[in-house]
View 1: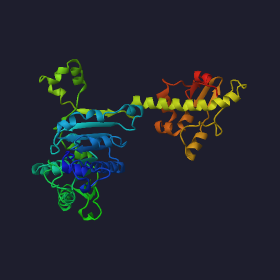
View 2: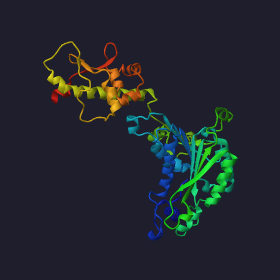
View 3: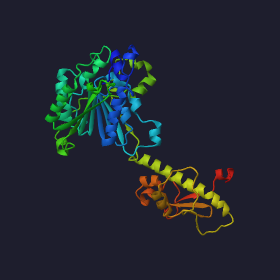
View 4: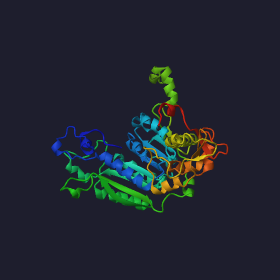
Length: 424
């Protein structure tokens, strides 16, 4: 949960309206970005697959984390339904995500609910983040928070950030940084609470923060204090998770479902009708990203990469073919090898990659047909990463790209219309 646009939170997060500039502390980058970047750096380092952000607010952190290739499930939970209502579009995949699919699947889901309610859909996560959340909890919810997050959900890692009240005197006229804050702790208060919780639920904890104080005030510590909790012994065991019964208390949320869009397209005034089914307002927001683990996208990428590589080799051969225009016959001509022309623009290979390519079967031509062995294609790094072997490549591209009679090579016309228009 982020600070509201009040004067005090404006000071903290870098918006200095209504505050004399000479008295305001400027954080570069703004403090909220430093908090999110801290989490992203942690994700880059530890590579969790399942991440949940409790108190996700406007989903800014989720949008930053969704680009991490290691994450396969990303969940946001917030008590403020209005904040979740129209956030789906910013989390859904864009055109570029379809043109360049991820290596791994990614599903993003938003839930409307309280962070102190148990919901079994958040069990077994690698990382749970609570960024500027706990200070919004009243005493009753704060008491239940460790039982739910540390005791019930029990993820491998938990990151909690909260304001450091010792920093507040550096701001002009600040007591609490947000009108919704129920408390703000000193470093000692936060660390005492965190160490007690960690000890009770078998976690270790280390303390750090973001938002460095100005010169001469180093003794107050970071503006935002952070606790990083790690489960002792690693992840929860399968048996432990299986003992938990399904508990689904969160409402799943989508701004406008496809069904509701259709209703409103035909009856724009329907948005004012109380008879609109409640299910249209409380559908789950969930979106899945295209990935190479999905057969149709894997095939699309592989066929495209093979076609591009074959075309690059074909175009590279044309100048040499022109020199050999008088030499024709059925005997295949070796046009590859280490002396084969290299396109002016293309990938840069390491010495090891170059050697692998040069030692692979070379392309050849028979008449006006150009043959590129599949083993040659597999020697190129991009294609080698996509395909484990020749049989796999052949089975995927066979119905999309012409192959030789024995299936060992891709076949292309040596010359095409564009070659006739633009002579080499």
